[in-house]
Length: 235
Image (cartoon, one colour):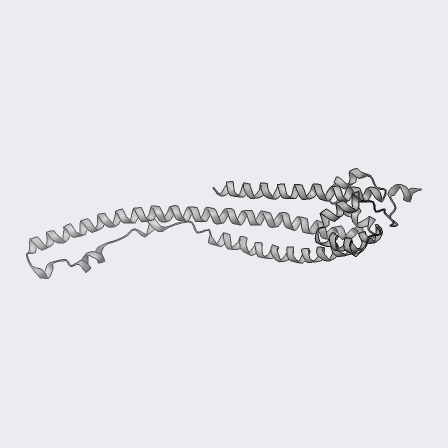
C-alpha cells in the first residue's frame, strides 16, 4: 500500500515536471534563436536557463540559484517520500501489533480467569467456610496478563528525525524560492527590454512566464539586445 502510494506521487511529479520543461524549453528556443544562438541549446537542462539570463543582459552566474533550488527540491522530495513511507509502515505495524496483542491478551485472560475461578471454587468446597471464599476482587487481582504481547518496535524517533529534516529543507526551499522570484522579476524586466516590449509583457512574464515566453519566442518582436554568441566574439 505504502509503496504504491509513493510510486503514484513520484509518477505525478515526473509527469508534471516533464510538461513544464517542454513548454519552457520551447519558449527559450525561440528567444535564443532570435538572439543568434542555436535552437538545440534550449533543450539542454540548466544551460538553457543560463542562455536566457545571458541574452537578457544579466549575469550567467545567477544560474547558481536555480541549481541550488533544483538540488534542494530533489532532496526535499526524497525526505518527503521517506517520511511518508516510514509513517505508513509504522501505522500498519502498530495496527497489526495492537490487533495481535488484543487477541493474545484476551485468550490469556480467559485462561487465567477460568483457572482462578476453578481454584477458588475448589477451595471453597473443601473448607466449606465463607472466610476462605474468593471474592470477585480476589479473582481480578490474580489475573495476570503477559505484557510482552504489547512489545513492538517503536519507529517514532525515526519519523521525528525525518520531520525535522523536512522542516529544515522546507525553510531552505522557501528562502531559495524567494531569491529566485526576485531574479525572475528582474529577468522579466530585462527580457521585455531586449525584445522592445512594454509593461504588459513584463507582468505576463512574471505571472505566467511559460505562456508569455512562448508569445515572445514565436511572436513578431525582434531581439534588440547586445548579446553576442561565441562565434561573434571570435570574429
